[in-house]
Image 1 (cartoon, rainbow, N blue to C red):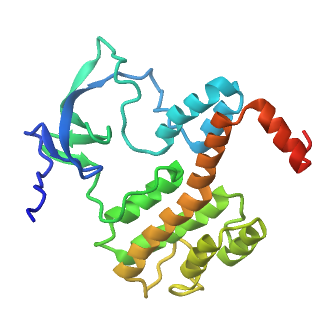
Image 2 (cartoon, helix red, strand yellow):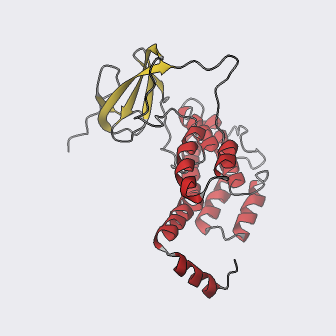
Image 3 (cartoon, rainbow, N blue to C red):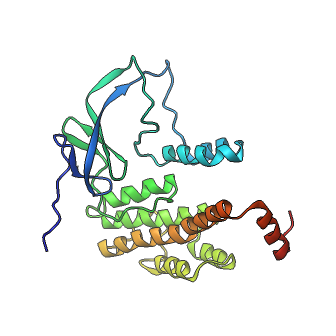
Length: 264
């Protein structure tokens, strides 16, 4: 069987293997413009907390679309918010360009002829529902997997701690968090994953700290644990809720509430 051709990313090509998704795909190129902020004004960095405060006051009809757009900012990676929106009268940033992949629609940033973003990553692609602040730790772990497996493993354990906090646990003691999640009906598969994370390596080492016994194999498995936990605890419930809201009428919902003895 013939091997699939690999075309390295290049500033001199309109088709190469995307540094984001890896697919061999057409790339659209863009110049970068710079638009000065007002004097003594700094960039507005959106965090998950800021987005939470913004969307809580929106009507339900506007909330879903607004949240989807705003959450992109919290992921800390470059993207094109609205390709149809253009500004005139701005300066062009020399020797800086962006390529956008036709396959995944994600962008790469180039300085002169060198790829500046994304950094080369060695771990598996993160789950799309990984919260933005946790995603940054995950991606950092991915870029240092070969350089520092112990550092990558420490960051991934920190990711798992933050996921527990995202699930409204204390986040200080993984064993206690697991117990609390079990009481809430934690899927046995996730419990096994969390218990594995807890016992692999030195249990006295806190999330985010270096365990001298960690190696590349341990770190590689931790990537998979992070994605599995997010898939089962965040993605699957979200998909079920979306399907329920789209397919079940209000009348049926009321009937279900009555059947289950739920109160308003």
